[in-house]
Image 1 (cartoon, rainbow, N blue to C red):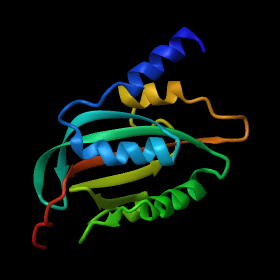
Image 2: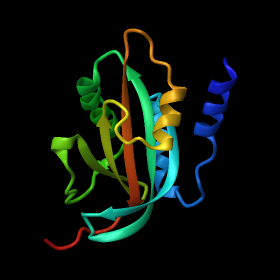
Image 3: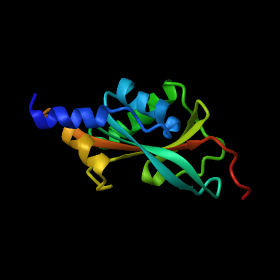
Image 4: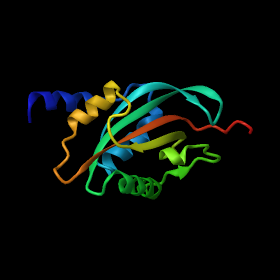
Length: 155
C-alpha cells in the first residue's frame, strides 16, 4: 500500500467528532454492511421537515458496485430497510433526487445516493481517494445528513 493511500485511510477512518453521535448508526451501516469508505463530520442542518436549524452531522461515503449506480441505489434502500432502519414519519424527503429519510436509534438521517463527485468537499475527496474500484465496477457516493429524531412541523 502506498504512503498516500495509508494516510488517506487513516484520515477517513479516524474517530468521528464527539458531536456527531447521530451519525454513528449510519456510518456503521455504510462501512460494515455496504463495504463503503466513510468519513463523519459535524454539521449544522437546516431541516425543512422540522423547520429548525439543528446540530447534526454528515457521513460522506464512497463505494463500488458492478450493478451501476441506479440499480445500486435501489439495492441500497432495500438493504437499509432490512438492517432495521424505518421510514421517518411524515418524512418530507426528495424521492426524485434519490433522497430518502430514515430513522434509527433516536436519529433521523436523510440518505442520498449519487454518482460522481458532486459535493466537492474535503470529505468527498478523502473517501474517493481511498477507494479503488475494480475495472468492472462503478463508483457511487452516499451522503447522509443526520440529526436528532423530532416531530415534523405542522403543515
